[in-house]
Length: 153
Image (tube, rainbow, N blue to C red; front, side):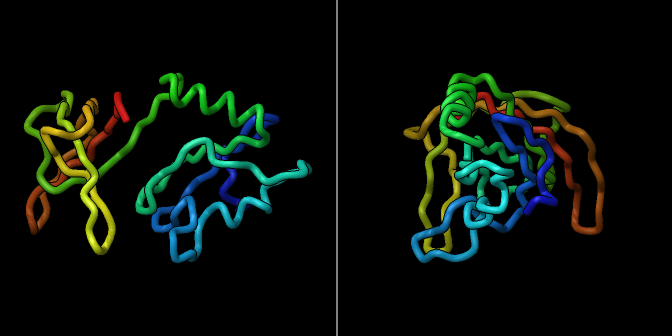
């Protein structure tokens, strides 16, 4: 796990979360990232804690608070919009525009094999800015590389 540490200071650790590994154990248990945090104490009496989460299938930078005060400060930054989030995605097809905003209300849909977010007029407001970083044509159609910056949620 220490090989995945991207940044370490007195307040936080930033780690490279791999896709396919959940942050928390599910109801049935199983492998999860939190189970590995004991090896990230770096001399402190307790392991770090998650300041936020990334979905199981999402890879990226995950911020951990090294102690209670740090975790509270990080929580205020995340909830108050003091931290910008940027995602990259490769999608089939893609938008006609080179940049814009997606503004659709979303709800969580539960399925037997997991859950997903769906557009729902009764859902929570959701806005995300997007920018096209690249496009490519392949044998099965076009794909687009997008930069996504959620403004809500």
